[in-house]
Length: 231
Image (cartoon, rainbow, N blue to C red; front, side, top):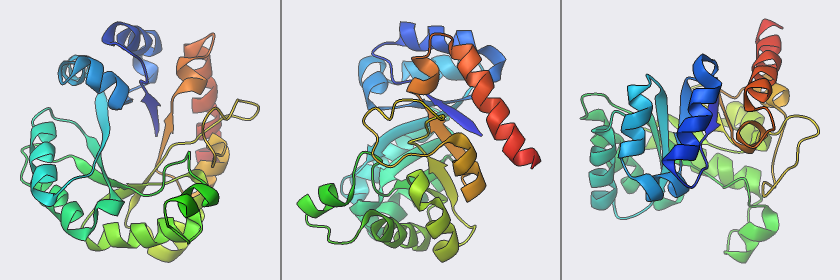
């Protein structure tokens, strides 16, 4: 499934995009920029349009604080949300337990290694493992702590599936159609390659939202994904 990333500075621009895509897009990501500008109301506006919401705020704090944040997000009826796997098992478990107590429990995803990071970036913060090895380690931690899924780059999909199995949902940013600019992403793949490797959800922003014809771009990507699934 495609999740469209609404990386816009305000609700007006975001909702214009949502209305342009219409019934062709049913799942949207709200990240730090838009949520900081508009707060919980942007979630409510998407829900009023019968859209599913992935709240990608990457909570990372002490377990009690994260549990409280998850409880607040759950009251907005979001469908998925994120915590940083590097917060540790106790923090992840607190997030999962908090989500489970909600009337509409969201899927808690653990963010592993950001798609903008490569081996040299990890080394600079003291992580000697390469990105794939580090993602696999964090994925295992997330699974043991009860997470329902992880966020990883396209390059780690197959290794995670091999080492961790099919229990975790894999939500994958860094998706770029063939010929599209990589922007600030370091570890990317095409929609076709990501689906074939085993991704469950593809998070796609600028190749759709910044396209001259967003609806046409969305339809083209949907057709590419559908052709893989038929194959």
